[in-house]
Amino acid sequence: MHIDFFGSLPLLVIWLALGAIGIAIQAFVRNNTRLVFGYYSGTLVITALLALITSAHKGTTFGGMISIGGFANYFDVLFCGAGLLAMFAARPYLQRENSELDEFYTMLVSAVSGMMLMAHANNLLVLFVGIELMSISFYIMAGFLRTNIRSIEAALKYFLLGAFATGFLVYGMSLIYGATGSLQYDVIASVIGENRSQFPTLLAIGAVFLAVALSFKIAAFPFHQWAPDVYEGSPTVVTAFMSTAGKAAAFSAFIAVFAVLMPASSLMTPQLQLMLAAVAAITMLVGNVTAVAQTNVKRMLAYSSIAHAGYLLMGIVANGEAGYSAITFYVTSYTFMQLGAFVVVGILERGNEENLQIDDYAGLAKREPVLAFIMAVFMFSLAGIPPFAGFFGKYLLFVAAIESGYTWLTIVAVVSSVVSAYFYLGLVVKMYFTEPHKEHSHVSPGLAGITLFVTVAVSIVLGLFTSQLLSIFGTWW
Image (cartoon, rainbow, N blue to C red; front, side, top):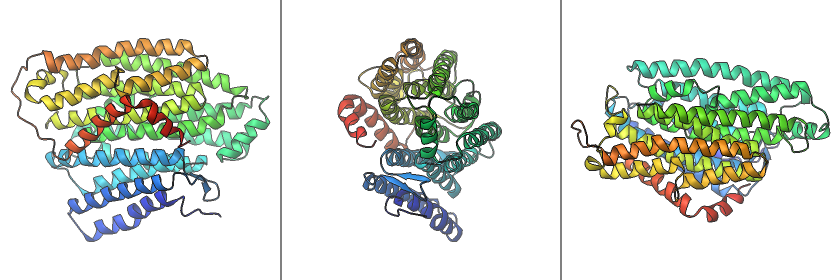
C-alpha cells in the first residue's frame, strides 16, 4: 500500500497528537486544564500550518482511499480555525458553568479530526469513519453539562436520530457498492461514466440514501427536526461549533460524493438535481418562516442554520465548479458569522437559561455597545446585506443556480432571504431602539474576545475583498 507521508502530514499529526500523546498527557497530568487547552490549541495551529504547506501536493494515499492536497487541505484549515476559535470561546463559558474538564478539549479536537477525514475521503468507508468520529464527539459534547437536563436531552435526541441517519448512510453505501462493485470515488465515477446511457436502480436508490444521510448532518428538510432542540439544549459554545464546522464538514463530503454521482452526461443527474432543488427550496422556506416565530435567540439561530443549509444546497444543485466554489466561499463566511453570533449569545447567557430570550437583548447597545455592534454585524451578514460576506456568498450561489437553469430556485431563495431579514433586523432593532426592561450586570468575554475579533474581522474582510479572495480559493481546487 502506497503511503504519501508528506501529503498525509495534517492527518497524521492530528491523529498522533490526539490518540497517542494527548491521551498520555491526560493520563499522567491530572486536573491541569490549562496544559491540555494549550496543548490542543497548539495541535490545531500546527495542523492548519501543515495543511497550508502541503496544499499544493495533490494526489491520493493509503491505497487511494484518502485524497491529499487542494480542496481537502482548504477545509482542514477551516476546521482547525473554527475549532481553535471554539476553544477560546469555550474556556470562559465552561469555567462560568463550573464544567471545564480536560475531556471537552479532547472531544473537540476529535471532532475536528473526523471532519478532516470526511474532507479527505476518497472512499465511502473512510467517509463513514469520519462522519461517525465527528458525530460521536458531538453526542458527548452536546451532553457535556451533565447536571443540566436540557443538555442531556439534547445529547440523547441527537444520538438516537444520528443512529437513524447512520442506517441510511450504510445502506446507501451498500447499494452503491452493489451497483458499481467499489466504494472508491474514482472507480464509482468511471463506472457511471461508462454506463451514462443507463439508469441503474440500485445506484439511484443508493444515491438517494446518501443524500438522506448527509441531509441529516446539514439539518435539511425533512431531516431537520433534531436541530432546534439539540442546538437549544446543548452548551452554547458546542452549538456554535456544531452548527458551523459540522455543517461545513458535511458539505465537504456532499461536494465530493455528488460530484461523482452526478456527472453531466448521466441520465440520473437531472432527477437527483431536481430532488435536491426541492429539498433546498423547502428547507429555506421552513427554516426562515419558522425562525420568525421564535422568541428564544438560540432557537432562532437554529432555524436560521436550517435555512442556510438550503442556500448551500443550491451549489450542489448547480453541479459544477461555479456551484462548488460558491459553496466553499459561503460555507467559510457562514462558519465565521454564525460561530460569532452564538459566541455573543454564550457571553451574555447566564445559568438557568437567563438572557436567552430576544426581549433580553433590549437596550443591549446602551449597556454593552461593543457586543451589540458585533452582533449587529453578524445579523447583517447572515441576512445577506452588503457589504458583508453573507451578501456575496448568496450572490455567488444564486448566480450558479441561474446558470444551471434553476431560476425558480433562485426566486425562492430571494423570497426566503427577504423573510429572514425580519428576524435578523428585528434583533438589531431590539438592541438599538428598545429600552431594557430589567437590570443587567456587565459581562466580560475573556478569551472569547479573541474569537469575536477574528469572526467579525473575517465577516467584513470576506465581503470587502470577495473577488480577490475568490481567485485565491480557486487555487485550492
